[in-house]
Length: 233
Figure (spheres, rainbow, N blue to C red):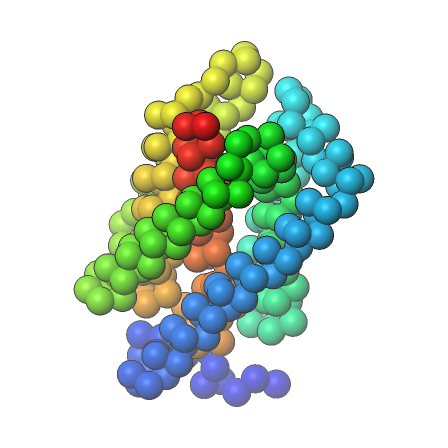
């Protein structure tokens, strides 16, 4: 059984314990990115998976894919964040990464194989994403400001975005570059909020769940920055 000390809130621990928690969290974010890259590589080199993923990008099938993604990631998040069981936390995190890797297959396949200089575009998007993620995280970590007030706004805007995506698929209109730009702002706000949670919300044994929240925001940011870069080609 875990020692009850593992369940202390980060805010009431010593400076050394807080720093250790932050290091573990960001190490797990980095690990999540590496696992994502590995799984994505396997997916993109599997013709069956690529063909299946591309078949889900049209009309109602894309809606089904989005619905499935939301259900899976919601379940995975509950496992990783809502449990103090380390095995469940890791299983939830891994499941989330796999779901992200699968939904990225069509976007990355198009970027890599259907656009000129697709590899360069992906690298540029990745570098900008990493830079923005690091900068926004640093703002919170250095100022220690509580951004929990963003939760309601992020939730409302998130539902509006989902509604627009669904409407676009049903009625066949393109949301355009402005929508991707707005989603980049949403992802930025999510990074501020998740980093704030890292300082003010979690217990010291929940670094895996904290990492998942940051990883999810990072992937959202990368998705829409990559879409913006792809639109220039």
